[in-house]
Length: 144
Image 1 (tube, rainbow, N blue to C red):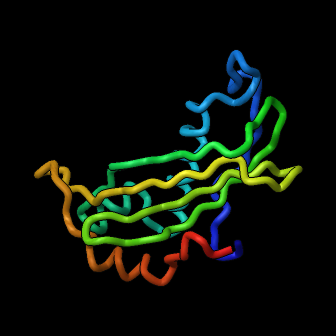
Image 2 (cartoon, helix red, strand yellow; image 1 turned 45 degrees about the vertical axis):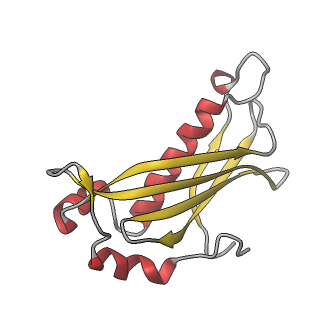
């Protein structure tokens, strides 16, 4: 997984757990959202950079989380993320959350971000300058 980027480390706390004593799905969304922002920053594409340097933004059009193994309070985890595709107006990011001690994949997220023009409130093509930054770092989603 050396081409995947570590985007978040954390710990499950009792406040993250529900009535079944495992981390509730709303918190996985929170963890994966933080990880995706870290991945954008890793590429130098913070929200500020997108707006100021490239006159664009990105909005999440789709997200899917597959829950594979539960986390409970005191479990530590790591999220690794990668860019897996670039389309005409969008890109796909994948993130995987692993239990640190057991090294088991606990959850996987696929997120599609669409490039967005704030003025017209509609999608726009991926700017060529962004494409040049991102195409060299695309990872096959099945690459390990």
